[in-house]
Image 1 (cartoon, rainbow over the protein chains, first blue to last red):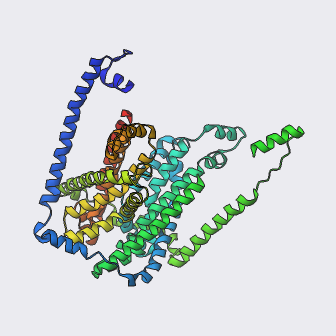
Image 2 (cartoon, chains in turn cyan, brown):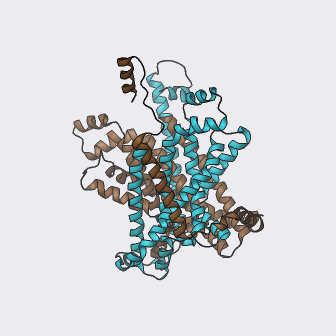
Image 3 (cartoon, chains in turn red, blue):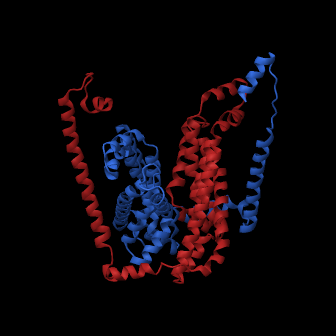
Length: 280
Length: 282
């Protein structure tokens, strides 16, 4: 109600009259109809451009043909499962190492990007925020391409791309956690004559460690699904097997790889759920 | 702990401190966890055969690659009208994917929330499993599969993004439904409303604001995914990226990456503004 009074009616009277509310509603209805009409026009236009015009209906053929080409994926190549164990393990390891490296890179980004502890606000705060946005805005595939061109093919490129990609989320969440801490303990520690580093170590880190740990574990869970595809651009793990099965048209093998990915992600989800409950 | 020391103060009149820096069982568990983490780390490095000596010259080589190959971004290439068309297509793809995904989210979020699901024994686990399945498979894998089923074009991209958005938003929505105030739901239920009416009149008014926020956030994330879904032939800017990567036109690649960063920044600002506005409506 306060919001309506202040922003839309511009009145300060304490009691809203019925006609005020009716006028507000009718004005709002007009704008709402406009918004919905605008959105549906955009939907229709997008559907026309993307789905109707851009699709090669001739090549796709009838519904039956689409169903038959989708049906190639139904069925699991059980013979492939023994070969999937080691790539799954590799994927888990890449995600683990990537998250660890990401946490290491996060430390300066968080330090710069948290408003209350940033060393020199006009310069370091924008740097920290820029690092976070940069890492989040570029997709992991693109990072992997870049790191493959730096390090060459192999797991190292995948680890670096996952690390850089996960900096954004971890650093942003940790910086927000640091910004909401209780200033009392910091003041207490500062009053004992501690220097900046000691304040950070004994006043700030103990307050945020549970939240930060739960964010890290959550990010690890996301990183499992990311590392499962990095093999597509040459960074090892399950993605490589997927790519190979797809290129040899072994569609049942593709389904098997997807099931393996699903399996490790469900394991990761259970572990992360349990550990996060323990931590917080 | 505190109570114990207080009672001891009361009884004897002086504080009997039995404090040690290392608490007996907890500390061992903590050190064991650290040890296990380190062991896993070293084992992984060993097993994956990571060339650690390459890390030494890493910054040098990264600087070399950036400055020699990627540095002057070919801005003229992305100022092209054809490219702009692809950008608009990417935005449309993200928009449609989010829309369809959000529509699919409504039943999945309802069935997958523990407190309101029609049947806890059958429908709840199925809905949760579908959600996990959609979430677990990366959007690139969906894109590849749908390209192989439907052929090149934007339709497979839209479908892949739909699946991605469904998985992303259903979990958030189900979590949002699980923390609503059950009093209103009870009240509606006591008037004899059926399941659907309970959903419409008891639950939806409570999650409306959060749902809009989730939808906007999902659009933001879907746009980031849409920029690269085309990498395997599903339309949008990703196709440009792939072509230039394969031709090793690194200056063009860096220009495309630059444009992606700018677009993502704009979409992030728009989504933050919209979410702030929606949250104010609460």
